View 1 (cartoon, rainbow, N blue to C red):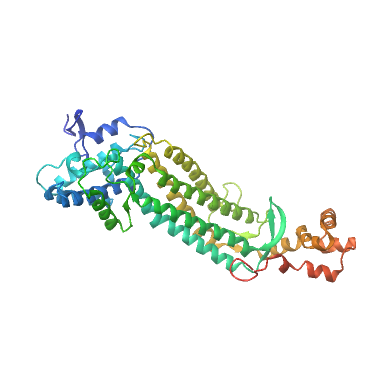
View 2 (view 1 turned 60 degrees about the horizontal axis):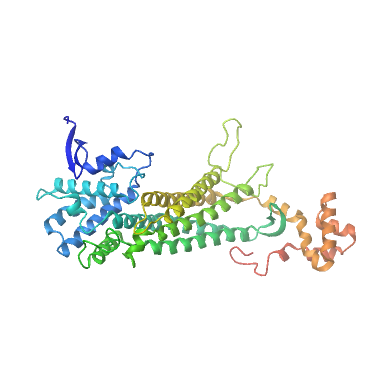
Length: 466
């Protein structure tokens, strides 16, 4: 041992720890033994473990399982972890024990040391006192649920709702602008730009509902199940008290899980939340892709929309501006789809009384929630806020699409209408001119049948309809 280190002990013997390290022997062992990848344990999980230690100390003291003096000293130290004031004290990577034991002990050791620093008194042991009535097996999945619920309610859901509101606003703003439809990337019957945007808005609202449903499952905390779900070494009433304290401190309606065995061995609520993120990623991928296509140009593409010009797009082509926000969002969506696939696989690998891929689930779900929140904000504030229609281009395409002949089929039949389309394409005519050339209908009949208002459906007013 040098002046820069100190000796700590655990059940395996002495460990040399940096003199100024706020952790103890088990954290140091983990720091040295787990060196896979650069990904650190998400700070949100660590902070929620801090809240669990705070809630456990209160519940244990109230139930006589921990002396009030130690509980009172543990609480402010645990609160510092919960409030993020000790984030520097948690150096461990994601890729560790599949239960998250090393991170749980990191929190236990930091809280114990900090509690003794803040208030002198009897020794506080990481396991015997800070971890009282807990196992990593129930505390860590509870922390995953808590961290994901907080990010979902505070970050992603507000971002999705803002996006939906912005899309609904655009649907209303664009309700009178008729455009050519496109199916298979080919010309199709007309609709309004507002109707098109109403579809995006409806997708966003449906994703909001799915995320709310996923959040409902995350509110169940398996805290109190301890090692295998039986609640071994917990006093009667502990789970209810501890979870009530967590709900009070966090402001979210967390509740005791209905079945601890499922809560430790399976993580279906986490998988469900990942699937809801994947669903949102699919919706955002379509929105960003359609905006990118519709804004292509400015002279040699569709150019139906004018996307905001946020930054130069090329290092060699002067004046080029690219749909960079849409591209960034699409990359985030692809990443989310990959992270979700890993979560679904990890969630299926519970064995008997424990799933041992918990750190991966924590890392991936929180990453997905963050990526989707950022993507929604990017689309709302960097794309939709400045999005404008190219009215002239929209009108030109709507008036020239050969699929206007669809309205003629009930009168002249499908095959003759197809002849009209073929002639129009062969000789670069509009549908009216082609039909007149073939002598199939009068000009007056064609003006009536080809009125674009006929193509827009029975509801032609209101946001996203007309």
